[in-house]
Image (tube, rainbow, N blue to C red; front, top):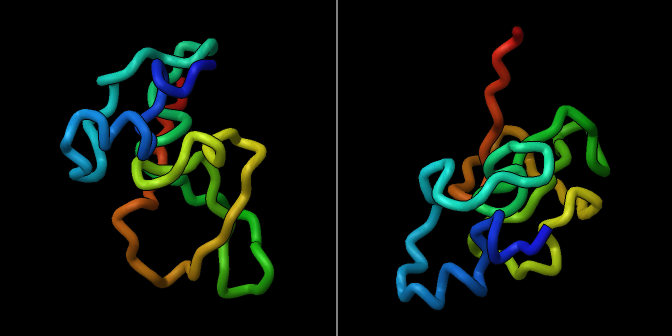
Length: 95
């Protein structure tokens, strides 16, 4: 996908002159699976351990990151007990 169409990242957030942070879901187009905001906007916590037991993996990039690191293949980490406005989680409703 073209990240400019499906994701909030630094490059398209700053061009609006409003690098204000997290955006409401659905302001960009859905990805090829029809899912909104899977890349960009906020990193998503995963349950995978990253480097140590205190860290969990994050994926997907955020509004403050370059479009180069938003693919799901990019993996970072964060301390699971910390707060960061650029990291969130996705609620999934079972059918």
